[in-house]
Image 1 (cartoon, rainbow, N blue to C red):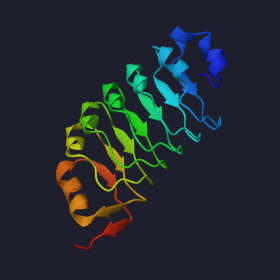
Image 2 (spheres, one colour):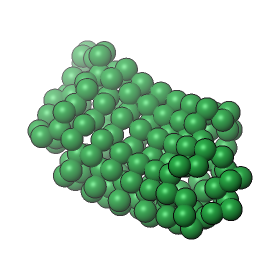
Image 3 (tube, rainbow, N blue to C red):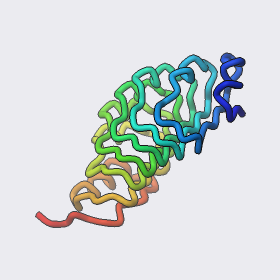
Image 4 (cartoon, helix red, strand yellow):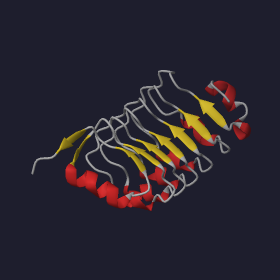
Length: 167
């Protein structure tokens, strides 16, 4: 596992795991896009606010940790990461998920704890391998919570702790 971007750049083809957490990064290091064998990427606990469309080129990626950043929008190209099994987006500022989220058919764990979502797209029901969905720390309407039970009957869901249960 590499924990330094400069070291990883020397071995682009053999970087399988890259941990750049707690590096005070303000931007997504675009050099990462050239690590074609990358399976696990940890950029958690930084200050990243924008993800490039090129993120979708990391076709071998199985685990992506972007938790505890300042991300408000996911690029639609994230749906090209069809080998992705674990996606951690906790404690960001995400307001919506791309509708193509359903393309992540290998996804087993999706952590959205403490974002700014009000609902999840119906396409989430296409995630046949999803086992765990964390939605704690957000406010959802009761009708949205009920739909999740219909869409994802086989998934262990960490429900929002607050409900906007009014009309």
